[in-house]
Length: 496
Image (cartoon, rainbow, N blue to C red; front, side):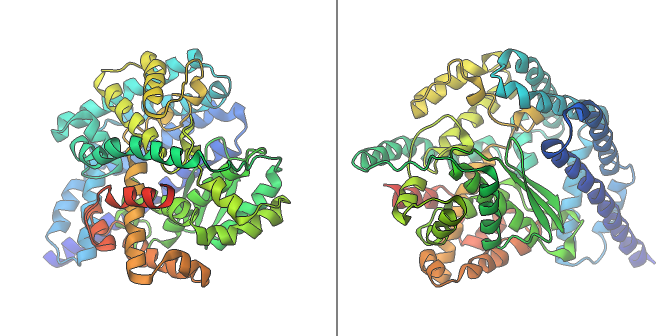
């Protein structure tokens, strides 16, 4: 009888979390629709609907019976994978029960209102209009972080990091990021000195959005994206979302520069391939989800940076670009264009070498915003000072390309940005591991073995979902603990 009770509890939990995943599916589609197709006048009603849905999901995650059921299921004879799933269930419940439902709904309303206003306020460089909206969101994020801190006994900002990267702390990040802070300035200078004697290649021109979309779709197909399980649309900020069998990505088209949309499409396709590669046997369960945001970013950055800008892949891109855009670029011109290192204002358009500097700035700003050492009103000056120091560019009077450029803070996602550079580190280690097993990646591509690369990622990352910890997954996939070594070696090898 005891075995039947404990087994029933695990089954009960599995069914409950499958229901949660169904509501999360529609929550995701609501966000996608807001960003792509929803009429502007629908924003207020959508915000209310999304707030109610978020509140309902929160209630499901905090159902009073869950802790008792988890404790009962712990004693049953589960498989290792079932225990991993139970661990993820426990974490989900713990994270949810820390925050009152009222705060969840209030934060959702404020975030959706802030994001909707940001879409026009950013275009108009309207910092004065945007600032009050962001102040409301940041105040609620601080409130959430303080509640989490008191419950978990860790620093407020660390509780936000833990939401996106379980177990990550500022101390660990500082150690991982320290080599980047020390070595990137010299590397950037070295690369720029090398480029002085190189003839700049400009990829600017006139490229109709429709032609760029057709190019993007063909490149996605080359990268193994299954359009039977997903779609490509446009939005003001590229992103990837969805669920099993319905993976959606967006990009944005600049008709004077095709490279931005192309590379963002490749980046988001990496996210989508990870989602499409997760094990169907664990669909709807916490252990069947992507491991963490850093691991998710490692897949998009592997696609965009390690694969997408490699010599072997550019050889395949070259004829497609000329075919769809009516251009006559040589392969050498594309290589120069996609490997130019130029410090700039926009994170999503940054080259591979300067990109981590954008993340280091945001990491420092987030910490200060949460602790109160930096106010929202002080953000523009903070941004200008740090961009000037790290990259030698100014944002004075240009807040749309400064502290207003990203969507993450508008929706209250503080603690997310470090995932990008952690992902770049993981991606570089994955390439090292791939080449140790399969040989040089450019050679594989030249021999038409691109599917072998995807099969490697499937074996090492995708099929494991959240069935092991991030640290264990990285160690298993790459053979060593995470560090900045592979990334710095890769940057020096490719650019310097």
